[in-house]
Image 1 (spheres, one colour):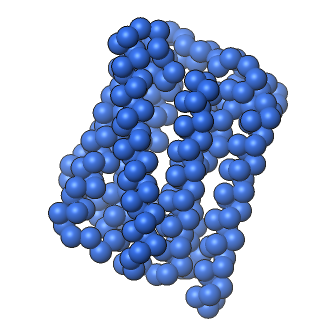
Image 2 (cartoon, helix red, strand yellow):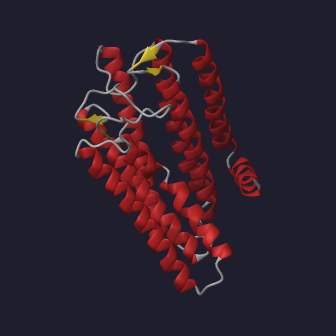
Amino acid sequence: MRGLKHVLQTVRKESPILYGIAMFHFILVALCFVGWMVDDRMLTGLNIWVKPMKFSLSGGIYVLTSGFLITLYPFSRRKKNIVNTIISWTMLLEICIVVFQAARGVRSHYNQSSLFDGILFGSMGVLISIIVLTMVFFIVETIRLRLNTSRPVQWGILLGWLVVLFGSWVGGQMIGQMSHNVGVPDGGEGLPLINWSTIAGDLRVAHFFGLHGIQIIPLFAVVLTKKWNAPKLAKNLGILFFGLLYAAWIGFTFYQAKQGMPLIRL
């Protein structure tokens, strides 16, 4: 809890607007949860408010993560503000489209049933492309610069950005086939809440683990460096091994999905 409090305090101090947009995402989580409880409309086999609730939570976590990590880079105040503004407002527009389409009872992704829906879906693609470009920016800067943290943690951050970029690429694969599932149409039998297919391949599995690598791998690096009394080289190798193992897991779930096999068959 102290770590989370430190992250929140740091982001709030360094970028109040980004912090406010992250909190808005979490408010949307609560509102979508209420919608889930009172609105029984269904879409592709799931209550219409579940998807925006999940996206709001994931988006809020990402905005907070990027807002905290950027404080470790030796950027000028102006450069930090520009990057924070791009990330936070882009994510805000993205989630607003997702929630708006849910309120209408229609799909936000892969929806080209009307000109209006197609424009919104295309706009989401542009917004996510901007976010992907910021990921590439962070990868380049993490390689080029010395961050205000230990070298093992910097390795963890670099691996995290690389993995999240791959997770975004998986999202592009879903857009390319205009569906989540491989082998069956979207909306069939799935795991509770997350709705990952239990009868066919589902690219959302690799996409999910990829996008959250930017939290999981750096967090592992922080814990390892604090808890393991070992030479720096050993810590670097430990973090590298964990990052490669995590990436291999994502690669396996992607391969599994492309073969039409579910993560868990029920």
